Amino acid sequence: MDVFITGGTGYIGTRLITTLAARGHRVRALVRRGSELRLPRQATAVVGDALDGATFEAALDARDTLVHLVGTPHPNPSKAAEFEAVDLASIRASVAAARRARVAHLVYVSVAHPAPAMHAYVAARTAGEAAIAEAGLTATILRPWYVLGPGHWWPIALVPLYAIAEIVPASRETARRLGLVSIAQMVRALTQAVESRPPAESRRIVEVPEIRRAQLD
Image (cartoon, rainbow, N blue to C red):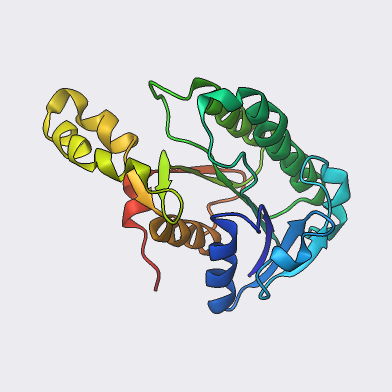
């Protein structure tokens, strides 16, 4: 398949590019000028600005699956302004470019919600989901809460608390919705999303339990 990735030099993006290329997909990735060497060699670089869809719209094709991975690194409550200026602005730019290019499928990493914390982050990501729906795009929306991996291990200490919360009926659904996923599970779920396009003009939601169960042939 033909895949175009925004955020391809990031935590998830580099791993996803490697996996998709190994499975025979043709991958292009958006990069800022000067960042081309940070991109895995399996992807073809497209220089542009993730906040301005006009800079990469011409690189998109109606056959493409556009995977949007741009976001503020290490999000925390102090970065509310960045969630608006980067996370939300970039998905709106991708939606506009995808709509004009009539791309076949948009894959978006949102966030699990409702949630008792990270309100500004959740608001920006759910606004991104709304932009996708308003544009009428065929889309898969993944909703992880926290993705464990290199440099992102601190929540591992919460695993026993999650286990207890899943036993208690009153907290079970919340604990599962806001559960932790590994970087390997996330890459598998994204790859599965790329390879299994939903029906035209529909939106498929993939929550934490489904991300954990994702398998590749």
